[in-house]
Image 1 (cartoon, rainbow, N blue to C red):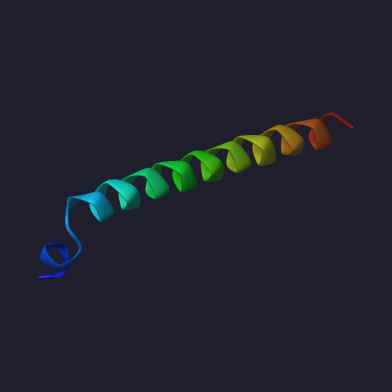
Image 2 (cartoon, one colour):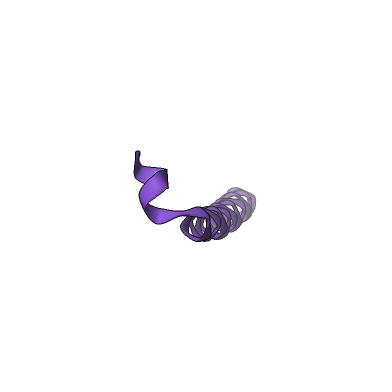
Length: 42
């Protein structure tokens, strides 16, 4: 129902946004793990 309203363009846009959000989240998580390891060394 919802997809018929919006069309293919919005689906592509949503997919791109989801990829960007996922990428940013994974980068933040990797950075968090790195800082955790560095704190353990001290």
